[in-house]
Length: 524
Image (cartoon, rainbow, N blue to C red; front, side, top):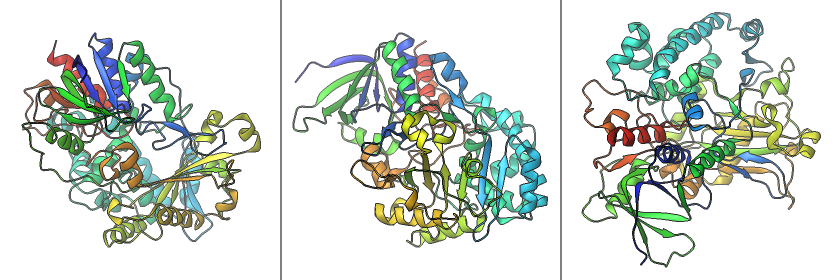
């Protein structure tokens, strides 16, 4: 067995948060080793040539950027271009030839679209909520790259007890019904609380409220931007700066156990029958789900698994490569405008709630609520020039409320997603699909089972588990740096650094940043 190599920090998992943590710590002079099971780094934030012989580089799992702070981009020197989309969203009204277009550059056109839908009152209510959320973002966002504030501190920063009660204490469904009359408008707002979160809008756990908060505070504006070059450009830059700082990367390295003493054992995925290799870290940063860390800790000596519930993801992702955008039933809106922002499919509030009930009863929702992003409209660089010249476009469909418990097959879920999409278009989507070098339609579907198998996400949960408020309860312990940064485990040398941290979830780098800051604070 080879000699044990020692590092100041060992990072388990080379997803984007692990790369952020590694880069910060190496630049601060620490010796860092990153262990990654897959042959490529980046985790869920990667780009890939998904279709054989087609020069289209798609963001395979994640797609937009909002929560990655400018602080991290600037401090690490990342060469990234993020493009703001003109259109916020388009939502066709199911069974009709009209819909709601929210144009960030034309308030008058947006108001006219509300009126055409018969939702004049809701135009003012939507404007009012947008203003209120801007105040929430202004209070919360600046805290995200510092030690965690307490609940009372954030409440004082907001300075509006009524708004605090409405958004942080009452279920989101109550807020939507109090502010809006129209079912479709309620649904447009509601989806920010349900991306990656399986919950009723009235769930007393308030998981939908927490998810909603993260979706509306990014950058202090809540805007979701398109990364030029795809999500792989983000993690590619993180890998570059980490390597330049001296981080040692070991890919194809499947971690099998973590010890409270900082010993990490792994095996080569290319030689499963070979000996385990051990490295040691003064700190171990776990860029894996907390439940995965529990299992790794239990695999070592003198430890027992933490009794925690297994996470459950609830989304289906479908990537498509089309020869052109589909026609709409609503001829007053161009496909370029409709798909230029977020295209909502069957996401009325009533449909969202019915979908939860269907899934809880063990059925794939019919119709499946979903939303679409067209990366190539904003950033054509992900397509080869010949595909651009042909008018080809990518579509990413993110379907909600298809929880892991359903055990549905990839084919079943793909068929349900396409049926939902076709129900709001003027033509079926299937004939618009390009074919790959083998003559197969250019469509790729990723289920929760796929995410669990490919990325090690338990239950396919993209947030590694339930989200947490980005602040601490007033009575929470804050005696250690790890507690103050929201990355603590029950072992002082083992810290979380992924989406399962206090401020984790989404492509933000906040989990990695918080873990790195905790180590630096602890060793200053």
